Length: 155
Image (cartoon, rainbow, N blue to C red; front, side, top):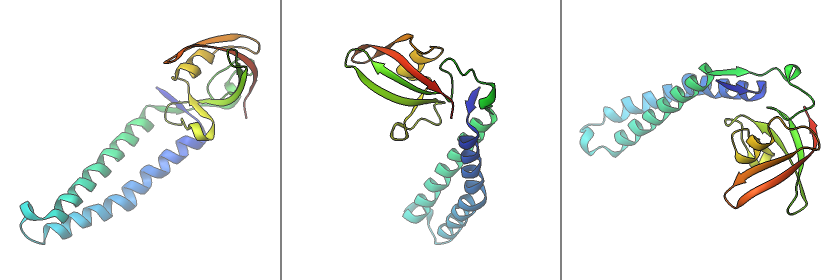
């Protein structure tokens, strides 16, 4: 079971609908057109259309599976005093005294440029359940990071 924000759930539904209603019919038409051009064994256009069709079908099935096993999380039901899914966490790396701020999200929403880290990442997993002032230890490739939680908010 994966928990998603309402925004991300809606984005996945929109992508799935676009693939099913727009992209797949176009791809199916391309396959039919290139198939009619003659010998399929020497038809590069046909092979490319079939690859695109397979890729589209694969993405559709993936999205269907993700949505089937996902639930939209209600932000009002989340604890406000400890780190949880959808929390915006500001923390300090105690070895470098560097402050960072990230939102903890599901793996399907992770986007470092947008400041979103997965709850399954080493840092996200270490911060889960911590309260302001507590120290989390995250095992990362470079060693162990000691992180002090400075603030938690749900936006």
